[in-house]
Length: 280
Image (cartoon, rainbow, N blue to C red; front, side):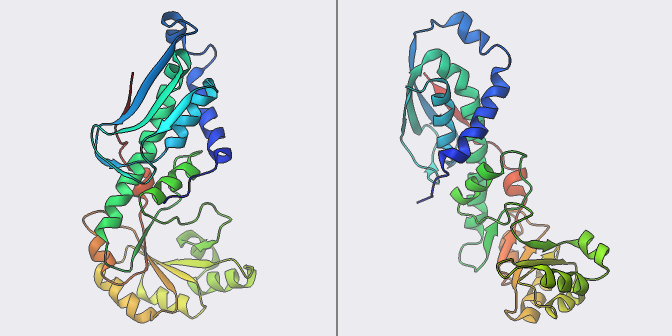
């Protein structure tokens, strides 16, 4: 069971998207063609197989324009869906429903696409110890929704923001002078609940990092043979995250090296939208 996001977090995003679409005068087409008191019943149907996410976005978009609208979910976020499957039924003022339609479908299709792609990666590494995690390569303003969609697909969230943890990357290292100095400074700065991760480009940097006790080491663009060496060298002293060069063709081989985490930016920056439609 996927723990849904509170409406308090989702509703501002939905309202901002509605405001963008309604513009200065609202839905001119619905106002011109549809009687003000007309009521419409419709279904949200899936047109391609995938994993569902974002039902709350559709509900909140419609109810923002018609608070009396009824929205009945026929499926759940995180559920595998097939073409032709009805995932929700709605009854609302016709003008409100038509005005909310595109916002509802944009958000639900985007989130379901992320959940669907994540599920493919999770299934690809099944039976290994590796977890599939996302990154901060998200759509500005939609991070909470997109990271929720990753969870719907069975993935795990990396940092939500810069204040979650210390993640020392190549440019931080360049500014500090070395991997070891960067980790040393981070360890002196961090509070007792703050994790420290450092990115390394080769095994020599990994050895240097391990001397200073990071919690997590990101192995950037390591090939499978290097990853296996890194796992043996680390011997459990830090969590190992593989990053870079990850796709559905390579992820299984990466997982089989024994790394703990595989981060995949494509989950959120390259997921195709899942085709979902609203039919009256």
